Image (cartoon, rainbow, N blue to C red; front, side):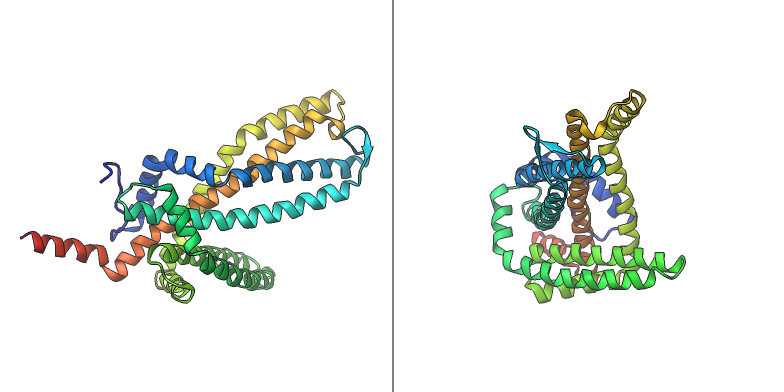
Length: 306
């Protein structure tokens, strides 16, 4: 067994679950991130491309004097629209990969007592690809319903905002717990989403509070990651305006804003993957509280040894 292995199948208090999440990141952050970068190498490249298209398109729209390459005129609208389409595809596909990768990673971690075999993660994703696609399609419909409800309740002062946040945390929890059910217990779509709903609503306030805490932590991580490029962009913009430099026609400014925007997108995507890790840890806790599988296994082992 890995000496740094952290047992996740425990009947923990709320504070202990949060502490377990931090301990897991402490011991596995480097290994998890390295593997994460390997799985998302293509999406990172595509993110840089769509960031460039969006930034150049936006700056062209602002200046209405956009030039590309060797001075050829181009329609800035086309670059902006192309960047938006690529961005949507990148976020959608990467979200699908992150939910699957993080869930498979955690299932592999628990199954092998902390030892991660990369090829097993990929095999697990391919084995469940049909269930994953079906869940994403159904999840898309649920998300549309969520948007409609959010728009309706947004007209209610204060209470509407609370309902929106509650629905958001509930949807995220159902998605996260269902994905873990798919990879951890190898359930089909119907059983997995049923368990996701059951664990969410039978532990509703714990799940909602957990989502709030993790959301705040992920927001802090995102702010930390983008603080450096934001500071650099702020300093550059200040001195450019002070020196009457036309930012919209500056190649350096375009590249700077491109990398800054890409950093924001990549940090958002990465914290989404970390969020799924947190819901995976929550899943094992809620599952053990309900079924006592691991505890009963340990008791049986003690009885057998005696």
